[in-house]
Amino acid sequence: MLSAAIFIPLAGAAIVWLLPRGRERVQRWSALAAASLSLVLLIVTWLRFEGGGSPEQIESMSWIPTLGVGYKVGVDGVSLPLAAMTALLFLAALVFPEDLRGRARGYYAVMLFLESASLGVFLALDLFLFYVFWDLSLAGMYFVIGVWGHGDSQRSALKFFLYTLAGSLAMLLAILGLYLATEPRTFDMLEIIRQQPIGGAGLRATLVFLGFAVAFAIKAPLVPFHTWLPPAHVDAPAPGSTILAGVLLKMGTYGFIRILMPMLPDAFRRYAVVLGVLGVVSIVYGALVTLAQANLKRLIAYSSVVHMGYTVLGIAAAGAVATGEVDARALALTGAVVEMVAHGLITGGLFLWAGSMWARAETYDMDVFGGLAGRAPAMTGVTVILAFASLGLPGLAGFVAEFQIFVGTFSVYPWLAAIGLLGVVLLAAAFLRMLRQVFLGPGEGRWPGWADLRAAEGTALATLVALTVVIGLAPAWLLSVIDPAATRLTGG
Image (cartoon, rainbow, N blue to C red; front, top):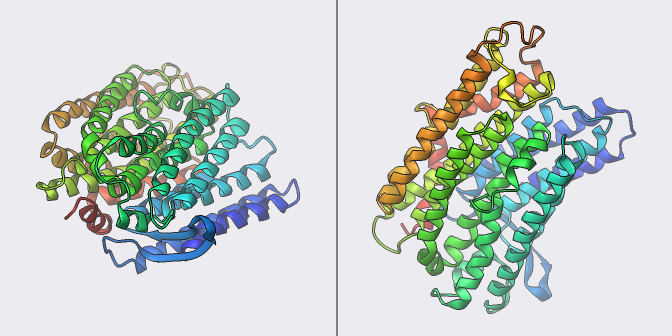
């Protein structure tokens, strides 16, 4: 089931690429069919999931036995929601209309290839397999930005690739350090957790921890490793930005949970406060820069830095101490995972909306808009819900996540939680200013032919908005999956 969910998009990519040129409609529907089937398989996996804290439904086979490398995939309460969100976001991105400049076949093939790699990262239970999928996702996103982006897209794609590749090389060294400490040699994540080959927080553990942490901090991204993110978002096509923010950024925060917390627990506890400080710096700095933006896409991009800061703050609190306050730490980790899901839905939707704005005006400059609420009520309603969800309004997904993060963090790092709350206020000011300038400001006669959301745009956005509201109002179905895994990872 899991292997099929990973490799059906890859098979779909091959089929799309082999279709003759000029058959854009057939290529599009083939891509949608492959992405839909992958999502259906993950929904079935969710329905069969028993909700235990340990990985379930494991599929395993030998791959390179002389090196202890295996093909091993599985799901737990952390990976399953992220994998399902990934499949949903790819389907929404493929549904969303985009100017493909006569290169539809390549676009759909690359997007499906990227989906396979992304799902592989979240489902892998072997470090070597994890690394392979991680690097393949970099290659896929590089082509999405460089070929189908606009502006200085090739430079932005190169900056994205070099930054994240540098991080992946640091992670490769850390993987080798961890692998060489195992006996017998293995890349099996569950076996490494059982062995705990690098105990304590000595020099070796610190170096391995640092290699992983740098890779994950670049990918998340945390300040000061974030500078690749704004140009990559601004120059990427809207579906590419949705996948970059909704899926690829989560690989960084997921790595902290999947690898560092259980495999290097002593080192994680030692440096958790440093990680928490980086999270708070990302929250406050990202919110201040978001408040200063006049470009729609840059505003949304910097808001992602804030939300990833929330996530990292919750992860740091969850792994901070060995005993005591277990419930609070589990709550912080649950909130961090919910934040990853909520941010994917909310910010993914906001980037699709920004793509709709670009399709109509070919600019992201907020100063040129105004008064669009009367001309595009559906677009206005969708954007208002997503913006309020991003700033953490109760009743929407963002609030469920942030409330748990801050409640859990207050029990461990009250001073970090208090400073981090500034980000909520600043982010609210930024999004309210954006809504006023774009939809409520004076703009009579400025865009006389402005069209409201078209069918494909509305379908993609409405799906993400609906889930944002459902999680905000009735989150138990999601929390019941995440909670057992969060409790296990925090020692409960």
